[in-house]
Amino acid sequence: MNKLSNIEKDFAQWYQDVIYAAELVDETSVRGCYVIRPYAWKMWELIQAYLDARIKETGHQNAAFPLLIPESFIKREAEHVEGFSPELAVVTMAGGKKLEEPLVIRPTSETTIHHSFSRWIKSWRDLPLKINQWANVVRWEMRSRPFLRTTEFFWQEGHTAHETKQEAETEVQLMLNEYVSFIQGQLAIPVIIGQKTEVEKFAGAEKTYAVEAIMPDGKSLQMCTSHLLSQNFAKAFNITFQDRGKTQSYPYLTSWGITTRVIGATIMVHGDQKGLIIPPAIAPIQVVVVPIYKNDDEKDAVQAHYDFIKTALADFRISFDEDMSKTPGAKFYHWELRGVPIRLEIGKRDADKEQVVLVNRLTGEKNIVPFDKLSTTVKMLLEKLQKDLYQRAHEKMDKLVFVGEKLSEFGPKMADEAGAYITGWCGDPACEQELKKYKAFTRCLLETHKLSQCMCCGKSSKRDVLVAKSY
Ligand SMILES: [Zn+2]
Image 1 (tube, rainbow, N blue to C red):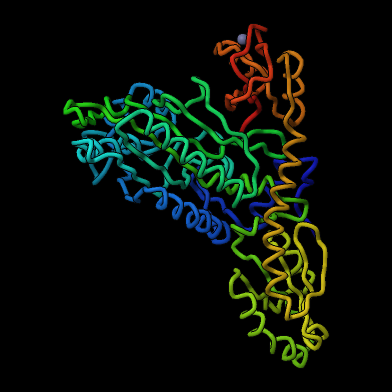
Image 2 (spheres, rainbow, N blue to C red):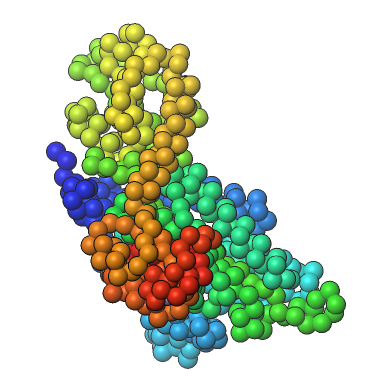
C-alpha cells in the first residue's frame, strides 16, 4: 500500500515521493518552478502568522517593494552583482518594445529598498528604520528540488538602517535569535548557529550569520541568514543622514530572511516510512476525526456526537473525514501520509460509551479517551508531540555530527557516509577549498575552540568550523 521509497535506503527518493504523495507540491511547465498546493501553503501561512507577529513585536513594519529592479541598481554594489549575476532573470522586452534599461526580477531586494532608504533617511531622527517585506523572489537554478532549491521561492526579507555599527550588530543578533526560537520551538528542529566564512557569506555583506540544521542524510541545510551589511550598500546607494554631531554619515544596514525551504527541512527531519509527521505548531490539521459506520443507524449514532467533539476541540485545527468512497483503513493511511499529529476514531460502540479512540501519529499508540477528558488529553498530547519531535530530532542530529581532526581522514567518510564534522580551520581559503574534493563546504564558524589544528594544513586553528555536504 505504501508507495514511498525506503527512507533508510534512498532518502532523496523518499523525499521526492512524499512531497507529491502528500499533495504538497505539483510540477509546472516552467523549469525549477513548482505549485505549492493548499496543504503546504497552509503550513507557510502558519509560519508567516507566527513570524509576522514576532517581526512586528520587535519593532519592524511591513511594506511592499517592486518585483522589477533596474539592472543598474544591481550593478552598484560590486560584490553583490558578482554574487548574483549568474542567477538573474532579466526582462528586456515590455509593451512590445525593447526596454532602454533591462529590469531584473528581484533575486533579493537590498538594492531597490536601499534606493528608497536614500529618499527616506535624512537625519538621525529617521533611524532606526526597520522594514520587512513578505515576497517571492527568483534565482535561476540549474538544479532544483521542491522547497529546498527552486527558481522562484517565497520568503520574508527584513531590511534595517541604524545610526551605529553596534546597533546594527544588535539587530542582526536579535533577528538571529528570533529565527532560532522559531525553528526550535515551532518547527521542532535543533540547529547549529554560526558565522559564514568570507567565501560563503552573502554577496556584499560584512558578516553573515546562518542557522544550519543537519538533515537525516547528514547534509547541512541553511535554514535562514542574518547579515550585517555595514556601510557598503549605504555608500553604493548614497544613503546619508545628518548625525547627532551635525555631520553627514552613512548608516549601518542589516538584512535577514527565511524562506519556504524550511518546509522542506521540516519534512525531512520529522518524516518516517509512513509519510510526513508535521509538528503540531504548523500542522494545517492537528486532529482528524475518522468516523466508522456501516449503516444509517450507526451513522446517526456517531454523528450525534459531532457537535460535542467540535466544541470540545474548538481551540484546535480539526477536520472530519466524511469521504464515503474510502474505507477507514484507506483514510488512516491517507492521514498518516499527510502527517496529522492526532487521529480520533469513533464508531457506534464508542459513541454509545461516549468515548473515542485516539491515535498518536509519532508512536502509533492507541488510547481510549472518554469524552469528558477529550479536550485536556488532546491539548496535552499536542504539546507533548511538539516536544517529543524536537527531542527525537536532536537525538538524530547528535548521531550525525562528529568531531574530525584531519580532513584526509574524515573527508572520505564524509563523502561516502552521512555526517557533518566539527573541525579546526586556520582561516585560509585555500584550506577551505580542499573540502570540495569531498563535495563538502564550510557551513559556519562556531564560537567554540575545541580543535587546536587546521583540518587541512595543520597550522593553528582560529576557531572550530562546521563542515558538511549541503543542500
Ligand atoms: Zn589551514
